[in-house]
Amino acid sequence: MSDPIDKKDAQDTDASEGRFRKQDWPFYWLTRTSARYFMTMEKRLKAIGLDVPRWRVLMSLFEDEHMSVSEIAEVCIIKLNTATKIIQRMVADGLVTTRARPTDARVTEVTLTPLGDARRREARAIADLVFAGAFQDLDAEEQRTLNTLMERVFHRLGEY
Image (cartoon, rainbow, N blue to C red; front, side):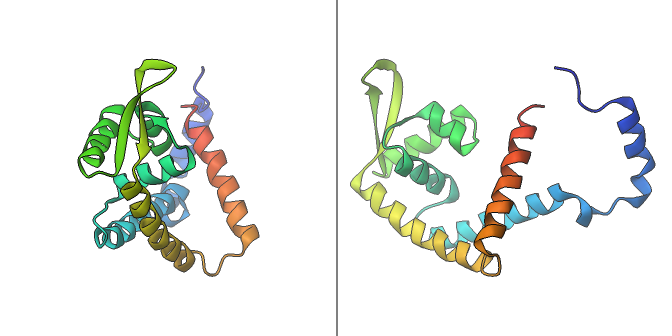
């Protein structure tokens, strides 16, 4: 695939350097918003003995009862070895169990335990409160628009 940024675009970017303001850069707000969300969730989840990585795995498994470690890594956008370590800790905590996939024994599947599902429900209640506070002045249409725009940017970033 060819690089979508040609020399003229690069020159235009160089020429605009003097006008750059971080507040006008969408990635500035994306990064700050994401970091603040994780800090808020980390603080609140700590009260129930969870952290953000475990929360993300729990929510992934709620939607799909059995997922491979690779599928979890992809959904959570984390490296496979990181997902493996998180899941090992979650097995030790009694939140998930693992098994060989019935159709392919080379694949390790992960599923929630009753304790994991209970923690997922507690964490989801916390996340719902954080969501309600963060989006209190955005109506449903604005939320859909934001999701649509973010999804488009996400897929575009996968092209590089």
